[in-house]
Length: 119
Image 1 (cartoon, rainbow, N blue to C red):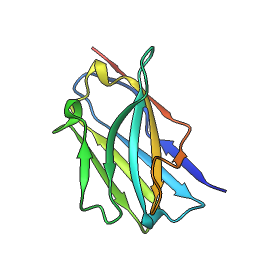
Image 2 (cartoon, helix red, strand yellow; image 1 turned 135 degrees about the vertical axis):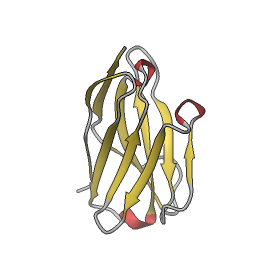
Image 3 (tube, helix red, strand yellow; image 1 turned 60 degrees about the horizontal axis):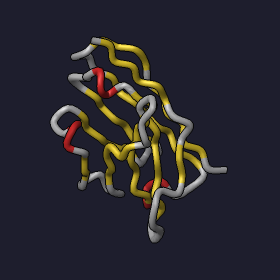
C-alpha cells in the first residue's frame, strides 16, 4: 500500500520558518523523483519544487527560490521542504508527490498539510 504522509505544517508569522516532512512507503522511493505542490484557498493546485533520485538536482518555482529548500534522505524514505522567510502568500495546503522511475506525471500524492502565514 502506497503512502505519503506529510507533517510539519502549522500557523506562523511572516518571516518565520517551517520544515515539512513527508515519509513514503509502499513504492521504490530511492528510484522516484519527489516533489511538493501547494493549493491556496480559491486557487488551483500549484507545483512548487522537485528533487531527483540522488538529490543532486532540484527545481523551484520563482516565487520560492532562495527561500525554500527541498532535500531527501533515501535511507529514511523521507523528503523535506525547508521554508524560510515565509510570506502570507505561501499560505496553502502543501502536498508531497512522487513520480516513479520510468513513468510520467505524478503517480502518488499525500493528503496534504496546512501552512498558514499571517502578516
